[in-house]
Image 1 (tube, helix red, strand yellow):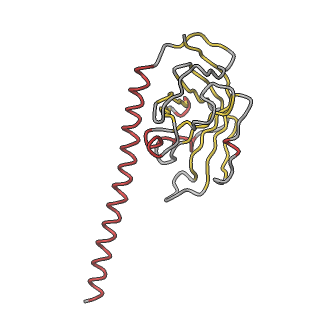
Image 2 (cartoon, rainbow, N blue to C red):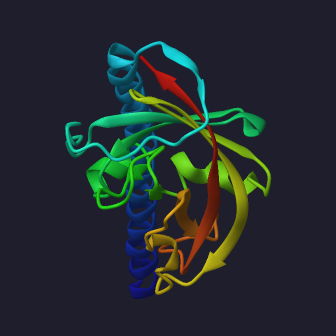
Image 3 (cartoon, rainbow, N blue to C red):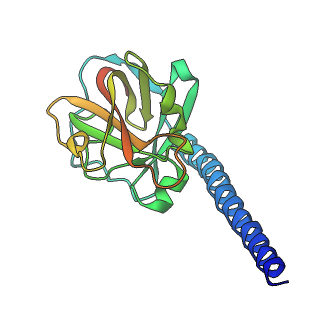
Length: 203
């Protein structure tokens, strides 16, 4: 009798745990989808038509207003993977639920310096599992279209902060957790390193 009751309670607990996991997973999935839809609307409203190609990366300009946390700053595309992802400002949980987040203390897309964008491996940045050296990464902002080319990918421990270090040249680092299909908090980081290859300015 006692064994039957224990089994019954254990069954209820397992069902409750599964329901919680489904709820949390569904919330993350729907939150990421709705966040991207909202970001797309924000970006398209303020987007401008690009002008002819230039060869120089844009320089830092103190006159430009810094984006607010959670504000959509651009659209990141990986043509070979047929991927388009809207990037927001900031790296907090609310921002990363909406889209990959630009680390506020790093260079903006197209600027000289290290532009760092981080995203969740199980939503927006799952596509990075298929990226490879030589792939193009385009980031369209209100200032222009910036084309980066992937130089390398690597897997590092979370204590390795080298992808965050400033650079003199215009570079891009995309960061997500690894392994991509790990259950729980993934123990490593997947890094995509790219360099600026071209610029399309906007008037």
